[in-house]
Image (cartoon, rainbow, N blue to C red):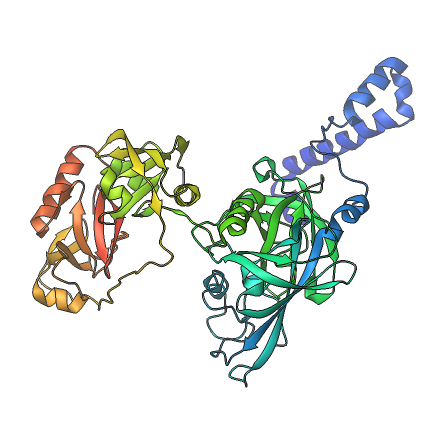
Amino acid sequence: MTTTLSTARPSRTRRLRRTIAAVLLGTTVLTGSALSGLSASHAQAQATATVTPPAVTMVQDTPSSFADLAAKVSPAVVNIAATQEAKPERAQPRGVPAFPPGSPFEEFFRQFQNPQGGGPQGQNAPDDDEDGAPPQGGPRGKTGALGSGFIIDASGYVVTNNHVIDGASEITVTLQDGTALPATLVGRDAKTDIALLKVKSEKPLPAVDWADSAKTRVGDWVMAVGNPFGLGGTVTKGIVSARGRDIHSGPYDDYFQLDAAINRGNSGGPTFDLAGNVIGINTAIYSPNGGSVGIGFAIPSNLAKEVVAQLRDNGKVERGWLGVKIQEVTPEIADSVGLPTAKGALVAEVTPDSPAAKAGLRQGDVVLSYDGKPVDTLRDLTRRVAETRAGGTVDLKVLHQGREKTVAVHIDRLADATQVASAEGGKAEPTAAEAVKGLKLAPLDQAARKRLGMDEAVKGVVVTGLAPKTETPIRPGDVIVRVGDETVKTPADVSRKVAEAEKAGQKAVLVLINRQGNETFVALKLGHA
């Protein structure tokens, strides 16, 4: 390599050597005896200007020790043992923990499993700390789950994760001094994975307070306390790695990501700020091996304390209900509806006789703000609606057919269970069709309805296939219900609306499709197909 360089580019090599020599020589001049050639004051100023690093302003002082903090808060952190009736479990891939039925984390974990069945390639899992579970399909008996929790009231209220105590017939809370107390379940909320317990004690118990998690910043020091692997009270420290993480465990995801070591058994335990207040509840980890790799997730205290307050007062959580299905506003959809940026929540479906329907919301509207607060993402809207008590009235700013307007909505109570209808459609077979932007379209006749499993209520145009090299979110088998602000019944309707959008200079047009019984909006890019 050196020979080639010196042979092919001798002048460049010589320049490089001279440059290196000059740099080294310059160092010698500033640091060696050759300083005598300069005045002492000039040399000192030049040397200082060369070697002095820029000043660094510390945002937060690094604690010299966490010992005082640990001594202050650890007495309020407890170990939780939940006894459950063991049942034969369905066969699971190797390395997949058993989740309580309906656990919000089951799909979150499974999506990262090795599809070949050779064990997990990466685990996104709650540290669902079940010890001594029987083999798959084994005999009935009892099994224990170990987790963590913390006392929020001297009278004996204890917070933990729902997945730690779910299905438990007996729950025991063990204090730092070894005192074991039977616990009763006050209430639990599976959607946020929070549970509230109550223990009786002859003396006031040590308790901790909630922090304001809205003030927590990325980079802040935190300390986690819990019961990893059933070892007992254990302290780990780290920082807040990120805010607002969505781990797809449910509609209310808004987790802190932490790099403090969190392992199996830390579930339900607290994460503290440097003032000794709880900023989060440790709930889930990402791990390729079942142990901590520095990626843990905690429920922020501001979300948790509202849930806990309702559990304490009512034994359950009541949430507001708007009555819409929403979807993300992509850059293409934003362009098709006239939004300058991809923000808001697109209304994909309005439930009949719902608060949204009564307020006049329609498919294709984009919710821009809720009760005066901006809606940037889907989670902004779902969380704010959920936090609204039933019976309240809020103002929604929406984009309707290119114009902003404000509507007042009377929020109702979310039912405990909802019925979701779905149809399973077969693969669409190509038929004689008209091509529009690479989409092969045909009328939705009876044969197509039968093939796709569509009932008579569905109207539109079926996509029978795609032209080669067509890039589109629309798939064969989709039924185009609406293009822009107009419903379509024939391929000619689709072609006409697309042509109108192109003539108006739009880069994309909003299309409502029905896919296997579910309606959703997509943006169809315009230009050359």
